[in-house]
Length: 285
Ligand SMILES: [Zn+2]
Image 1 (tube, rainbow, N blue to C red):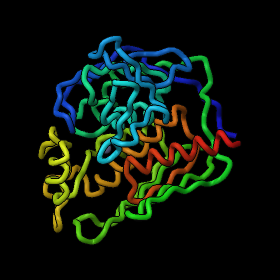
Image 2: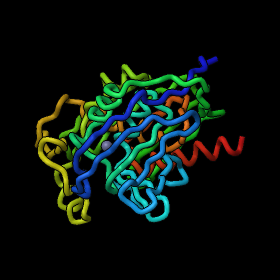
Image 3: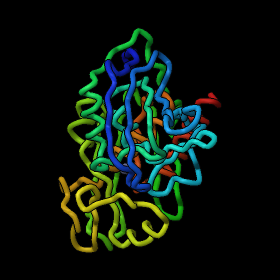
Image 4: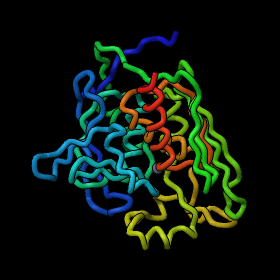
């Protein structure tokens, strides 16, 4: 049996400031400690009544999952929550109130490292309640036939992620695979610093759709036909960032997952669908 671990929150308040990758809006994100069984909840402190946007599948904004994840609760949106959620999940934080002063989370360098450093600066505190983890009774697979993307989740006593970054050969992106048992140490060392990336030829379309307005050469890895157009932090930074995104999107389950999740070429929309399928399996059990 997997060891029963205790819930964890932050020991203090921590702040991350920046602009949103897509909206370019200035924003302050404040991580606050929260009580047991609170979960992860955003609070839009710039809106009247400071509405809450809980990090659960019920609040996925299914219309806005291309190139970023979006959460919504009534008029309150939270855009690009995946990197801060990845940091919280990767560092084992179950309970936190996340204040946001604008619709989109700060990009900083478009990795999870600024949030990991904020969590480390605040410190963490174990709570008395045990974690209520999600376990699977059988494997499940979700697919996007058009793109060939696929996610399989296998029952496991630990949280493990494998990402196969295999794309058509028209880009400078040799096949890359990252496998990781998700622990705070592994998360920090292996994926936290990997930044968002994009294929160069997709940029004009992205900008036309009003996205990516806050991206810069230093904060986005741009991949061309024969080379990295901007400098990579490591050759497999793209696959590492995909693991980061997957962990962040799986936080939408609302509770820690014990499973081995294997993903091929998937993005936010398929990750959200995976969350929905996992929850359906649990409801049916
Ligand atoms: Zn990302």
